[in-house]
Amino acid sequence: MISYLKVVWHHEFDDEPVFLFSEIEDGWEIRKVEKFRDGRSQYAGPEGSTGDTMLSETPMPSPAEIAEDPQFTLETIDTEDFDLEWRGAGGG
Image 1 (tube, rainbow, N blue to C red):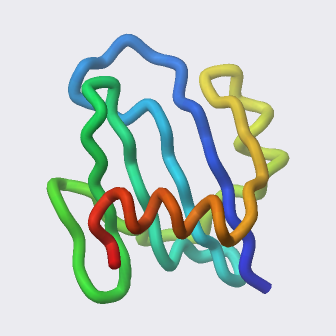
Image 2 (image 1 turned 60 degrees about the vertical axis):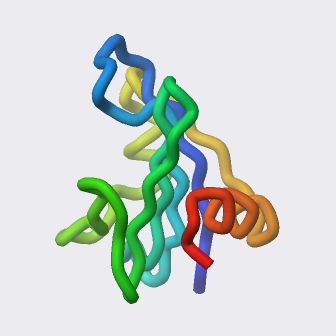
């Protein structure tokens, strides 16, 4: 089953993303978009990536585990919302 997550990362680092959008299948990221404070986006997927964005090399934590960490705010999104971010980042 495929699921889609939007994670807000609460931090003060200028060179790290503040929004993480992930397409997850059976616990593995298959596509990802990272958005930064300055408005730029990067992506990673099976056919390539931009910037230093990479897919996770290990299974993703469960949404409950992510939500337990106070530095993250988690939201489940739908396919259309993810695809909008993916296209906006240049992913296709």
